[in-house]
Length: 216
Image 1 (cartoon, helix red, strand yellow):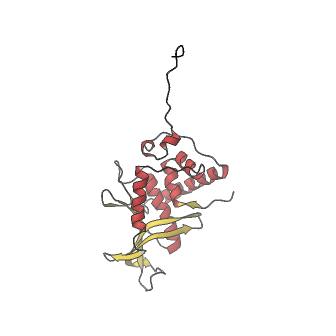
Image 2 (cartoon, helix red, strand yellow):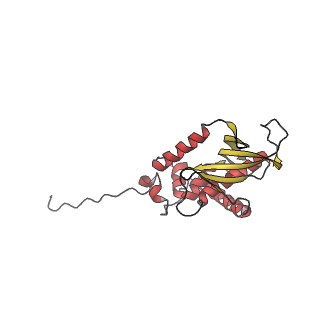
Image 3 (cartoon, helix red, strand yellow):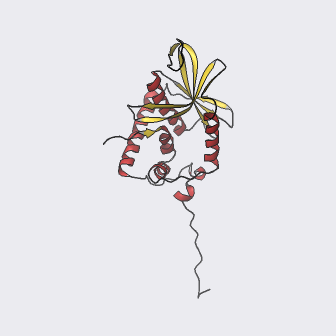
């Protein structure tokens, strides 16, 4: 079958919950809650900043559109930081012979209660890396910035590259098959259910009315 272009955001949605992904991408259903709204506001603040600026010897670009033709992936990085390095790459947008190392920065509202990051967030950044490396012919790093903690966490993208690459290819294959067949994966109860904006649609509350006895 011919594969469909997949947005990077779908990777995170699918790993968070395949059923939720299906409701959004196939059922065209979307509902926002507090957590979604907060995350959106944080991303808007990042993206509404200057297109590019310099700070602490870094060049920073926001809302960077990236893609990878081989994986048929595309999306927008919140932020890419450039630091001068002799082992880096030239950037066409920068009119100089300087070379830079690139770091992807993904903004998240809250750090997980357990662990440094979630697997779905890591894979979202890995998918961005696949695209950034393709566009800029580099080997980028990736970090997550948690706004509630004002903390940056470096992700082990290079240490486990083959593992994440194989997982990404598997997820893309599943997404393509589901899109082709219009298949919404079944509901699976997990730790994400309580905070999900689609919980009431996915698992509506059932109100049991007492039976009437003798018309009363």
